[in-house]
Image (cartoon, rainbow, N blue to C red):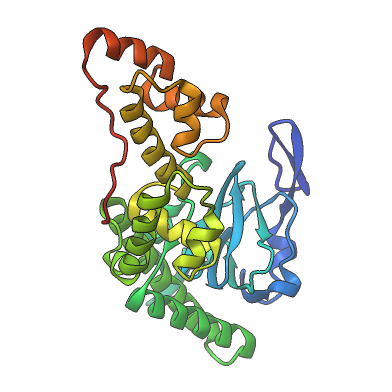
Length: 329
């Protein structure tokens, strides 16, 4: 059960620490913004908050786990968490990290003002709560992160820098300026979330098309060799974490999924050759374990390699699959 008075609440089978707004916000406004780097981002315990949180990765990569599901956050990624979402952030070894964090209670942008005119009090909403509505979702509907590029990325970084400056200086009207920047930031992110649901970001595709295509060509020609993620990322001149993110954004598959789809497509061709054993085919296409080969073959096709061979020998028809064939994007 959740309790605003307690520092812990029961989540599944264990207690989760709650960061409370009453202890988090020390200034006169229920808002704070900060810079985090490697020395103060060595990993956090599983926790939650009773307020909103925005994190933007300005440099490097980190692992963000939300309700037990982990995602890699790379440079240009922003995520928003509503209150009481259980999560954990971990630094990735050898990554130079810089994160801008922004936290606030929902009332900060939805407070009311009282306007007196001719003895009449008018209570009206200063800011529309609709700014927050897209982000106040259940845990299972939280988006893992949004990757920003180009002009949008520059706008977001400018807004965050301006809020940092206002927050640290506390000059006159700093609260109003922070609130205005925060509302604009939420509007931009909300719009980009909607766009990301409909199509991939073309700027990401165009920027990395050549590097990924060259890597894909190499994978296509060497999928049966001992090719690792580190090998592929070096070819693309990216860190493994960043390469994994971009590769999946562009191809729709992880590096391992793409490589295995090529291996399985070739295995299906070889299964039509009755003079090759299942083990021979397994090693020929690049797998080093026959049990693993059979497992992912069945996962993709619904039947084992041995069953496929029997079906093919009886019918003479090859299995139709959606497995990846060679070719650049």
